[in-house]
Image (cartoon, rainbow, N blue to C red; front, side):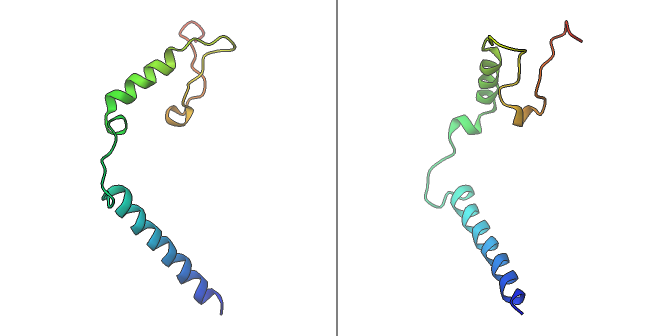
Length: 80
C-alpha cells in the first residue's frame, strides 16, 4: 500500500533532479561558459605529462590519476 506512493515519488524526484541538473549545467541556465581547462584536450595532455614527469623518491613509479588510466603501476621497459 505504501509502495504505491513511495516508488512514484522517488522516480519523480530523480526526474526533477535530472531536469534541474541538465538545465543548469548543460544549458547554462544562469549563464557562464565552460572553462578552457575543461574543454581543451591539449591542456589535459600537458597536465598529465607534467604529473607523470614528477620525480618520486620512494617506491616504483605510479600513475598520478589511476581513475582515468585504470592501470595502477607503470612498469619500466627494463623490468618486462
